[in-house]
Length: 109
Length: 168
Image: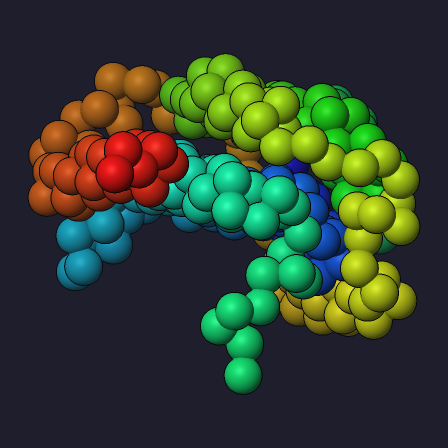
């Protein structure tokens, strides 16, 4: 038996570390890594609840493994996000010779 | 009353501590390449946590997609862009307030989780098999599956279109 709060606290810690990384880092690739950390924290949450809630909810068409399937969808969307994100990072580097996010301020008012 | 600690909880705690320590090193490291390698450790530990929770398919997808593909992509991006070494060069001036915000989020989440699920337990021995997930996926979630595959295709074509050098 595993207490449910164990994976939930693990995921909360990973999410908080990811938030710190996004706020405190200025290298764009490190910011993207921190975003991956936050998405993974959400996945840990989804899988833990999917193992904890044994039965699906028939009224909304949710099955017992719905949490794990949602985690798979999140992984796919994260892969798409990292592809686009790194393409933008490389484009910014080609134009400005730097990928510090605080120096990219053309759209700032 | 103190409940007995099961061996699965000990295994999960060790995995979680290793994952959290390497995640902390990831956001404080001086060298971006070390950061990517710490990310590998954290992602592998999350995969191991899925295995302890007996979610085998998600665990192997985690290893294959994240450790196999996404980290390699990040390492390529690090090689194509040069980054300085040192925390002052990699961090901005908001380190203190960022730590404050993330600690506040952590405190709030931990309080809520412990308040709501202090006594809830689950048995990971009832594993979700890959066959079960496949049946659910293609019986109940076919439309989201197709949408997400189109999304992935569009994202990859978009990434090529964005990163390509302009010929004109």
